[in-house]
Image 1 (tube, protein in one colour):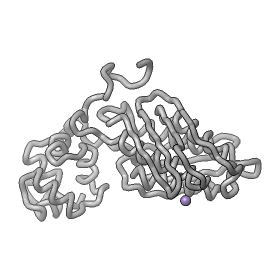
Image 2 (tube, helix red, strand yellow; image 1 turned 60 degrees about the horizontal axis):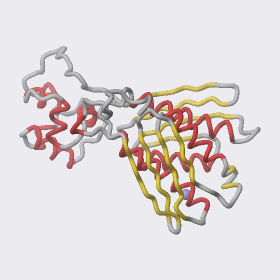
Image 3 (cartoon, protein in one colour; image 1 turned 90 degrees about the horizontal axis):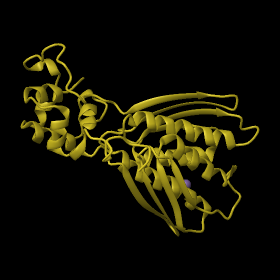
Image 4 (cartoon, protein in one colour; image 1 turned 120 degrees about the vertical axis):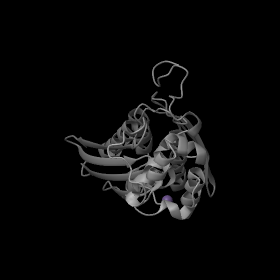
Length: 280
Ligand SMILES: [Mn+2]
């Protein structure tokens, strides 16, 4: 810990949630900033200083610099709930290890052995701001099917686990992505009700070495494992690379919205039933 955000916050008697509400962010984000998992930019310093009624420079320095905080101060409920997960998935066909941080900055390290799939998953991370570490070793000597599908299952499971009880998330997301001549719309509900609508057609059988028919398999497996209702529609487009890439970017953007903590209801599950999943 190299900053005094937490110490100043406790002096003010604020929970992470309360400080987050003052400055229009999520409790998780405040937790990330306090723990140094999120870079303390000038913008964040100014926002935090306004919320803590101090100067931006007061945020720097070690927490012990001023009135040492009591040891073993109990955490307020909801404090420091990191939305991260690691999944290891080993079968005869594939060996996969994936780590996600939903509150990341879109940093990635991805290796599936399939160049084109790596390119798509990098877009997913970059545009969702989910940090994604993925290492997959699959039976590519047979074909790319198992590796494609199992990669989606593993990422989906990791996202679902990191979402936990899905309390306080925005839940819905929607994105329209243009890429030159192509336009794709992705709409989703992260409510733990897996479903895929896939209105995407390709005019070429392969992109790179990858069969284009595998992309539907990827999205189907991801929707199932992540527990999301996922509607993907290519409205128009000609270039097959643009068509599929706009699908991944649309998923990323819609996912980014849906999994964001809504600061106005950050302790609530966003369903009138009080629990997500099951019948409507
Ligand atoms: Mn591309």
